[in-house]
Length: 273
Ligand SMILES: Nc1ncnc2c1ncn2[C@@H]1O[C@H](COP(=O)(O)OP(=O)(O)OP(=O)(O)O)[C@@H](O)[C@H]1O
Ligand SMILES: [Mg+2]
Image (cartoon, rainbow, N blue to C red; front, side, top):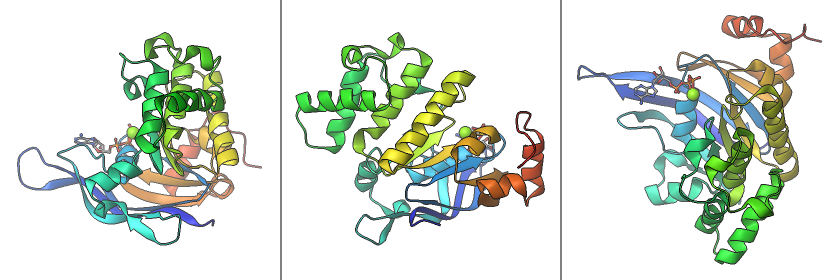
């Protein structure tokens, strides 16, 4: 495998039980690695712990939930690695939106409805780089161009509600790129889109991976998406990793019975070559 960028080791996340006393573990001993420039799929049924695993990386597990065990190592540019679980809130804020960015299924929540997308992307640029407002605005236009947002320059002043679903998704990815991340955590980024738009957004992610060397952890419940986009796949069930494999290997010879079930449920896939 390529040089490791992110290494999650034995991660545990739990929520307190309602009736006082005790914790309910929802992520249990999860280990996974994303190499530099690698696209890794994280799949599994609803409730298997995919989103919480990604949120833990950014220190965003919603309270009262918390990380109960493990380490999350992010390789430093000059060698060595830092455990994100041990960073100060301030240092973690710099990582978030800086070296690691996240995009979600519902782009509406990523934007504040009262500001234009150009302003918000420019602010994201300024949060991570000491540039003037004018330069940040020009960078926002370049980022929107980069994600093939139609007529980017003229539409910088558009408000989130004036965009189509696909345009909002592109704008959210542009905002995620503002801090020049090495790693993008993409949680079901295409689930809310129709099939054509979904293909376009996946193509964009692949392009960013190719051109910018961006590593992507792509959360999805769709193995068809994985087959088209990912280098490797991690399969989760009930809070645990049940299988990790290269994409071709997974489709050719799934080792875990649950992975076989997932594959059997895939209507569009032809027999493995
Ligand atoms: N705020 C919360 N309070 C209590 N339990 C939670 C909370 N958020 C998530 N959980 C529980 O943690 C488990 C894992 O949730 P998570 O959102 O990571 O699943 P997921 O794999 O992303 O599912 P989906 O495919 O539906 O997005 C689920 O059983 C869920 O009920
Ligand atoms: Mg989820």
